[in-house]
Image 1 (cartoon, rainbow over the protein chains, first blue to last red):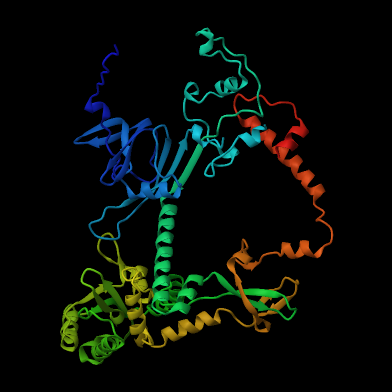
Image 2 (image 1 turned 90 degrees about the vertical axis):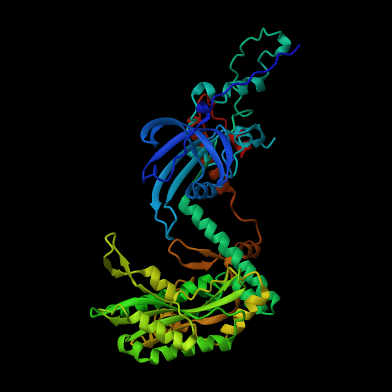
Length: 130
Length: 432
C-alpha cells in the first residue's frame, strides 16, 4: 500500500517583502538565487534568496531579510527586455544594480529606479543541439 | 568529435572568455566528471546491483563537455530605447499603411524609406565621392521632424537672451471640432492674428513664435486644434494680464482655455532658474505630429493631411520674425560649397564640384565608418569576378588556423577540471 503524502508549510517561511522604490538608490546592488515565481497584477514577480541580507523597514521596525521579491518595477522589466531574457526561472542567479533614479515627469507618478541586470542561468539539457 | 564543435553556445551567451564563474558551490554544479564518466561508459549502473564502483577518470576531451552557463545582461536605459524604437517602427508602419490605403502611395514609400536611401555624389574623377541621405520631409516622420526642429531650437535659444525681457509659454485652444478642415485651421490662425492685433496683446508682447497642432481625441471622436506660443514680454508681467488675454480670446473664438507657463526651469525652492526649460521650448518647435491616436485609420490620416496641406505650422511674429526662415537656411548652408571631401581615388574635391549620380543607393550597400561617415561597401563580387584565378588566400587561411588553435588552447586552459591534451595540430585543424 502506498503511504499518504504529507505536505506542510508556514506562511512566514514563504513571505518575501518587495524591494520597493524607496529601497533603491544609485549604486545599491543585490545578488541572489531565484526560488520561485508568481503572477501579480503588475506582472510576473520573483522570490530571491539573497547572498547578502538587506535591511528593510517593515512597519516601524528595521528588519534584516534574506528572501525578497522583485519584478513589480518598470525599470526592472525594461532591463530584462534589453537583456533579451523573457522571464526568470528558479535556479537563475541574478545581480541587480541600481544605476540611478529617474524622476517622474507626470504629477502623481512615482520615480523609476533604473537597473543594470545580469542573469546567469544553468544550461538545460534541451539547450544542446543534439 | 571535437570539443569546439560539441560545445554549442546559445546565441545570447557571451564568448567563453567572458563567462562568469559558476555562482553555485562546487558540489552543486553540474559535475563535469559525471558527464565525462557517463559518456566514457565506465560508471556502474543499476545493472550492477548497486555495487557501482567509482569510475576512473577518463580524459575524454573532444567528446564531451558541460554546456556553458547562459548570461543575460541588460540595462533599463537600453530597454527603454528598444521599447521606444519598437513603438516608433509600429507607428511608421501604421502610418505607411494608412497613407497607402488613402491614396498617398508615394508618401507612404517615402516615409518607409526615409534615411535608408542615399543619393550618390560623383566627383570629377568619376567615382562616388559622397553619399547624401534622402529624407521624406513628411509631417508624420519623427526623424525629419527632429532634424528640422534642432536648428530652430538653437536659433530661438540664441534670441531668448534679452536681460530686460522674460519669456513665457502660452497654450491657446479652441473648442474641439468633429471634422478637421483647412478652413477651420485657417480660422484659428486668423483668430490668433486678431488677438495679436489687440491692445492687450501688443502692449505687452514684443515678439514670439507659435506652432499650430491638432491632436485626436479617440473617446470623443473629435479633433483638438491648439496653438503653442512662445512670447517675449517685459521682465515684470502683471498678474492680471493673462485674464485680460483670456477675455480677448473668448471674444474672438468663444474658447476660454488659455494656459500660461514659465519657460524657465524651477529650483527645488520654487525659484526661477536662469536657464531656459528646454522641454518647454521643444514643445513649441517640435514639428512632430502626434499621430499615434489616428495612425491606423486611413480616413483620419487623409483628413489630417488634407487639412494641413499648405498651412504653415510654425510661424514667428514681432521681434522673432524671420527666425524660421533663418533656421531653414542654416540647415541648407550647413553643407558649404567650399568644403573639401576626400574621394576614394585619394584626391580632394570641393563640394561644389560634385554632381548627383543616377540612381539611389540603399543603406545595405553602404558601411558606416567609426568617424560617422558613410561610404559604399567594397565590391568584393566585382573583384572576384574580374580575376581569372581563385583568390590567393590559402596561405592566409593557414595562418588563421594556427592563430585560432592557439586561442582555443588558451581558452581551454581557463576551464576547470579539464586536462589539456598535448597539442595535436591535425586535431585542431579538423575541428575548424
